[in-house]
Image 1 (cartoon, rainbow, N blue to C red):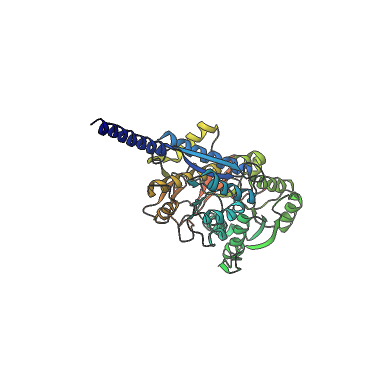
Image 2: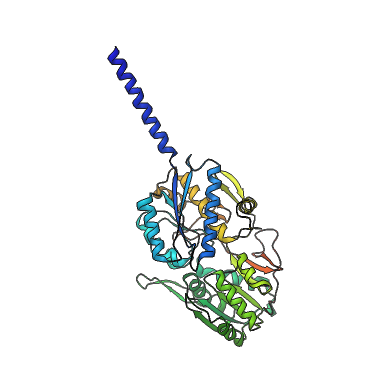
Length: 429
């Protein structure tokens, strides 16, 4: 009997130790990695991406974590360098043992990172990386958390011109200037009607002819690209734009800082277009760097504080109003899209883990790919479901305009209440 009692006690101790081990394992942090450009050319956006991720993770943890586990966010500075970003994601996966990742900023970094994450069968949720060729490589489990690929951004500009500018006052000529950058080149291709080729084998991905400008009877009278890094000849570029007499100026920059430099140069030469559209410039830093020169400048965006999107976080409703309030409390500033987009990525990954019931990335990818218009991922950027390439289905960009020192939401006019009137023409900088 004593022998049986000893075995019984030993068995109970064994069961208890197993239970404790299982409990400890369940309580282990859920590690998620993000390589971001915290220094270098993309540092302004990269820093805000970190803030967006941190705010989302902190909010999730305050509400109990994901599947009962606290989230541990690992962030590394890739210094705006593609090779460094690749190495950091490999380290996250093979050394740090992350169970999921958040994407990085810019098409330039996202393009090579996509191959590494696909090789390791990780779900790749991109906050920034709109170049179409990222999505035509055959990668599985890739999901873009902005409205559409760069090549289709021009549709929103065309919509503004068609719907908001009186027929007899529409711009007839355009000057298109651009950074030689992944995303900027994509927007350029859509506007100019170029062919998009697959860099892997040279095959045709899309023929975008005749392009959004030609479709709207706008003649391109001047076009120029500047080098990806180290460009400083802004005044000469601005003078060429002014001499062209273009009524529409399109500036496709790789960063908010480039948008500032271009705006300042156009002010110096006293350019007087009817309409100005930039691909960057929603950030407070743009207004700080340009002042009244920003007045009337149109910028596309994926998010605006006045867009009444209703989302879900930690299983509870979470509105744009909630996001703005939480961001202001934590960082002491009003958020822009560079913080909102990564927050939405974090929401998407959380919903995928909950939907899959685990951090198995194959199951997470399957759950995301099965989203529909009626049963989407719900974020502060609105609702998301994706096509076979990983691009959002039927989701247009928002168009904003700087007026009276405020970034106002001006288009589309029939989707939400509270849309501001677009000012036109722009006139002098």
